[in-house]
Image 1 (cartoon, protein in one colour):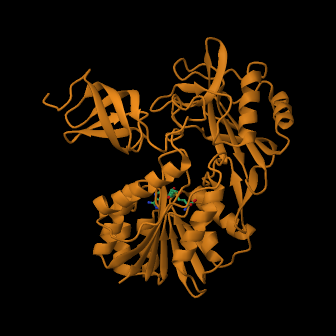
Image 2 (cartoon, protein in one colour):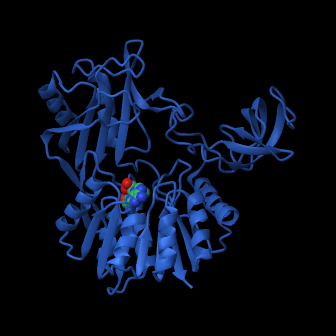
Image 3 (cartoon, helix red, strand yellow):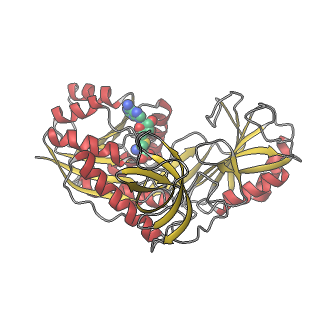
Length: 453
Ligand SMILES: C[S@@+](CC[C@H](N)C(=O)[O-])C[C@H]1O[C@@H](n2cnc3c(N)ncnc32)[C@H](O)[C@@H]1O
């Protein structure tokens, strides 16, 4: 193959950027080399491992000139575990990289010239996750637990995770030490033998309430009463213990059978002044502190006076909808998962909102139907999954012309693509605000404000 570098070459290169997996990217005569562990603005010596037609991979041998943002990763399993990608960079460096990544994507993919503001980060970018899903396994007869290694289902065994809560860490250690005594033999994905698949810990940040979910292969927990007693002793703030049964050969964590074995079926949390009930299976943003920052920004961009009808497309359990309902005349939420819509209705009721309406179905079908029924939005908020908005929904927005669109996105690339379509259809992007929902990782959430021209 005619590439500028060959397998086993030893080179000194300058790293320019990071991939979405957190690997450094250096270019040799325009040919990208991906270097795990390398940071932008570093000069490094590498050993070329593999070359493909358009890019190659190299191993970091030594750092000649380190990045000013390089630090020792504080987590002992950082280089094994696939959970975090950026712990070897200061938080300031992470925020700077995320801002430039969003700016580049906006320019390159969307040809969007709106200002990209500095990323809104956290004061303390650790212990922020309110949900831990911990897989278990047996290795040489020993119980191991932690998180999966990058692109694999091998567990990086650990006793602590620096982005999870203390409660999750304590339960991880206690269940690991006592799993065999409690007849919770870890399940092995290859042999399909064993019982305990995952320990899931959720915490309401504002209320301190904890939920523990045990996901097992078999429906019977032979020592159920002992397990309940044990969990309550380890975690006094536990309000709900749930047993989920998953006997399928699958990567999906939860199975279909969910039983509350002690306490309540839900825990509660607050985002701003809005109260939410969270059940074992509900989707809920994992960084509640930054969720508030994100939603406040979305609310600011919506510029509501109290007279507006707002549509919240891809509304999940209605978290953004209820935030908006505090300032709007009416909010209509649409979401494809019927269970989430049930949660949204219950949460609206719990907070005493009478100006909300929720409907289950694909946003791209329900919103055109609403327009035909005379339900038109003054302001439209969208918060789609990573793949971005359905094209039919973008066409509907362009045809129906709400005066303002607020686009919340967890994928800057699909966001930039969709902004281009909306700009070509008569909108102007006014401002782009990244919010760091996932410190120590390469992910970045973005809120965008568009006005009809
Ligand atoms: C990024 S989440 C946003 C959830 C919510 N806005 C929040 O902040 O909690 C995207 C949501 O879109 C939903 N979804 C996916 N495809 C959809 C579609 N075609 N129509 C409506 N909702 C959809 C997913 O089920 C998920 O709840």
